[in-house]
Image (cartoon, rainbow, N blue to C red; front, side, top):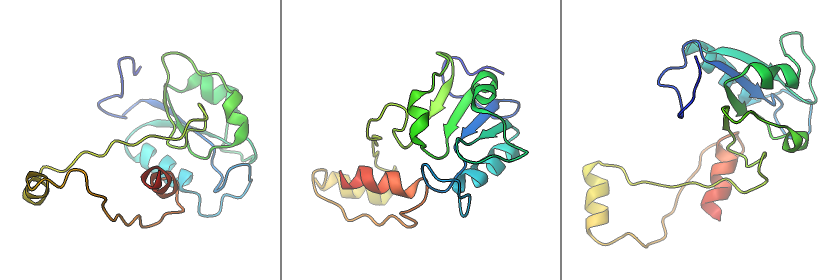
Length: 152
């Protein structure tokens, strides 16, 4: 089940790797790490999942080399500094919400919804106004990068 040409339509049978399972970069603390939830969700969707962490060793983890060699899709679960030096295969899909691999700040494009309220808002010429946005869980794996991108 390769992923050439973009993201697969289904995760069933797709070999996924979660690189970085700690809660914080360059830490070995798994407490409250959302990478474990990501692993459970990928398994629930039928993916074959390998996990690795530069600072944590567990019996159910594999080394980084095996994860990179055997995964079609790689999720950066926790952006340890050592991951900037890793090499990925050209055909691998790498999902990095942190900008950990390139060192660049993650980017975000916000598209308005298609609901009646969004259409009414945009039709009244409100396209350039600043909006107040609340990010609940701003310290999480998604909340923190999202908060930083929105603040930028």
